[in-house]
Amino acid sequence: MKRFFAVVCALTLMLSLTACGAKQEEAAGTEKITFVLDWTPNTNHTGLYVAMAKGYFAEGGLSVEVVQPPEDGAEVLVGSGRAQFGVSFQDYIAPALIGDAPLPITAVAAIMQHNTSGIVSRKGEGMDTPAGLEGKKYATWDLPVEKATMAHVIEADGGDFSRVELIPSTVTDEVSALRSGSVDAIWIYYGWAGIACEVAGLETDYFAFADIDPVFDFYSPVVIANEDYLKEKPEAAKAFVAALAKGYEFAAEHPEEAAAILLEAAPELKSNERLVVESQKYLADQYVADASRWGEIDPARWDAFYGWLNENDLMEADIPAGAGFTNDYLPA
Image 1 (cartoon, rainbow, N blue to C red):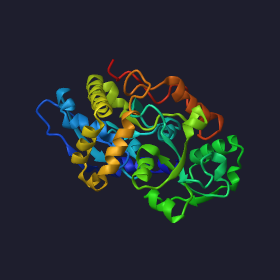
Image 2: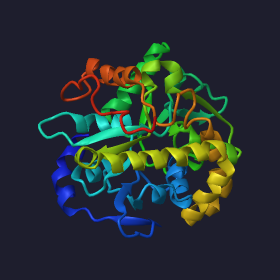
Image 3: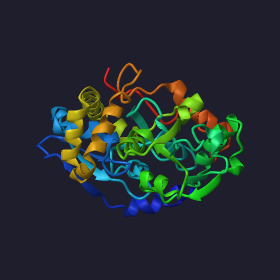
């Protein structure tokens, strides 16, 4: 996170946009919007590509270009104004909200209603609960919030985090890493990596952080927006979020057709077509879940996670209640 802030100024001046092969034709009088992903295209992003393919953005007078993120994520690009919207995560946003020069970004919609991340391990090796990680090899990113989360859930289960063997993470393929034994446990998002294990026929154990402690049911991922853009062009921002909502609602109701749209937009995924389809089926129930509408952010749940960060001194300054999100741009 400290490295994140160290490169903010340099990146703002130096970043160049890399297109993802997704750009709508710009008609006269349309509002151009740049949307930056958090990673390469995947099923977290399907609603975006559905909205493009179905013409929902065009109906709202918008022309949308999708770009790849810089090395340190979408937050800097959106904060600088070089992209108006992007994909981030509540925990990633946290350091951007504090300090002498906070980034002008705000979450305007939850892509998923609940945190689907947790720990995957080979089945039957005792890591189906957090305490079972004692003496095992865990692939770590060596981040303060990550390690505090792991310590919290392991110790709540009666274990000792100091007895977990921390292996610097170089994992790009969870299935191969688990099968090879290079690591025993990996923090994943089940909707992609967990489904990948299923598709590969690898039997696993898994526990979700949100099931261990509700404080970890934070919003991941979310759509972020540049605050200046929200103030200067509120109607265009609302039109964008409304079109995006239609895209995700369609993906929730028609997962296989939505998967086909994603595969068409990102042909590099076609080698993993089964994974895309199965992931899309899994996420169809996650986009809206128990919320009254797609994108809704529960203030109490949002603040609970940031309150936990504050209580554990994981940020350089406390994050105020209500900081970093708004539901004002969602369709009624």
